[in-house]
Length: 131
Image (tube, rainbow, N blue to C red; front, side, top):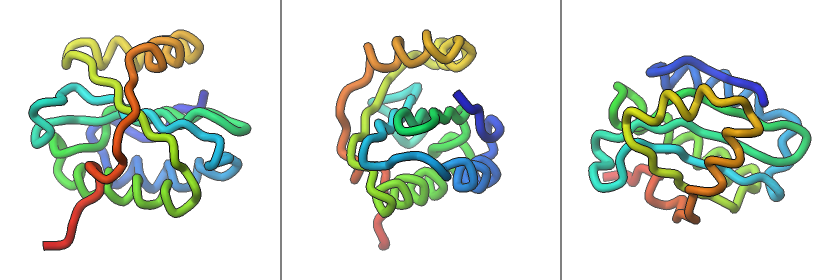
């Protein structure tokens, strides 16, 4: 699993992830959005796992409204993934304290844990709408 980006750096992480997406088979890929809040999305931070194809990618918690520019970067990422053919989106909600421990697991354990706690999600909730 390739780790991409820096914690709390949405724009930098998004740009690094765009480069790392080469070789991902999007129609087969599963996109896991790992968050620390479900009922308070306006405060949430998100890490992303893209699983499938030739390689797996993991970002730290770099996206979401918890970080300046994080909500826009998350929206841009989801739109990009949709444009490239990704259709299977999942959300895994963990406690704020568990996020760091989860992201530090070895890749095999991380994938097993995320797959066990993730639920299908509507990608539309991550897309920003024009006012």
